[in-house]
Image (cartoon, rainbow, N blue to C red; front, side, top):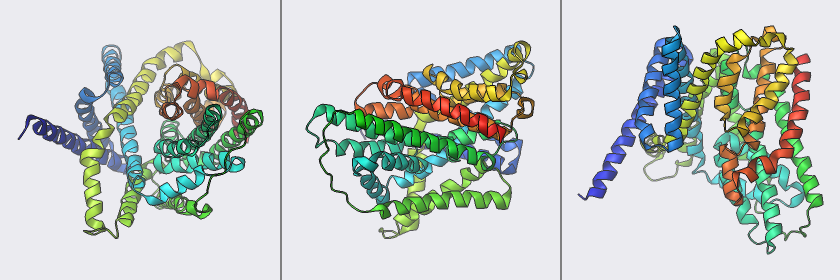
Length: 472
């Protein structure tokens, strides 16, 4: 056997071991979230520590710096705080929850990646004529984002790029591609304002005591509607000011019926989560950790029903591959997300005595705090702060909702509104980097320059909305 094949085999074994450890840790976390108790959370947290130790050497430099920062904060806590063990436990619990939530949602992306329905639906939306293209792509980015996460931007963005290649005028081609990419990006980020299958809802409702997705979803849906309609209005104004000539007609294959399977999948997802939560009383994010992988495996089985070997063998093979190969391949994302949660939790704990001694936030009127949250999230995004890190850092420093004179769900509406605007405007988020790559521009162009006005107007409108919502 050659040296190269030996190295590949060793790498496969390394990934397989990592996958077994991380998915065992996640299984323990899920049991803990379903009422298994502190012991399961501690064991899951220990498993995540081992996972990070295995993944970090093969991750990029920026991820290694995140790990070093987390270790440094833990060392400071050990040296300065008598409750350091509780702080580290809370940090590991946050890190393990984020890792479990990410890999649960990645199951759904894995199933969608081989679905012909998704491709047909995406091509139909990308081929819409100018008059309804923005709304079609924005709603498409919104719905695809629930099933594919950031993969929705890659899929629809690639289709948009193919659609403008026949345009002979380079300036017109760039302008139209920009408008299509913005529709996809803004639609995708709008789902972070309300969907329980997003980190924004999962994390904020786990931190803000007394809050729930069912309690906040009405206000959050209004936020999402504002973001989509605002983007559509700005796009219409951009179209009127554009100097590009009329577009060549594009053949549209299929009909709106192409979107029905995706809509059915989303109805099944949300209905299943709601039903299981109603029957068990377990919080929505914990239900998602179990329901989404189950539905994903069912989707893979459905796709494989006519394949040789039968759907059971195909589904089992896909599951084993996901655990042993595909899951560990997310090492960069897992290290970043888990450490962002850990760092935010540790930093917030270290800052709490300082804030308590120097600034009484409970003396500030609640509506002012809500408005500040809407603006603070996009601002921290410009400073290279991941939204997960920002929320884990900021939210624990807030007084109880009762002390602010607002409902806990009003804080959720404010935080998720700011999260969505941070995602669309920060040059450091995954969505912005994807759009920049597809549009062949810099992240500064795709983030604050393309979306600066959108973010400012969105902050103003949503500031008014969170104040109104808090008063209802």
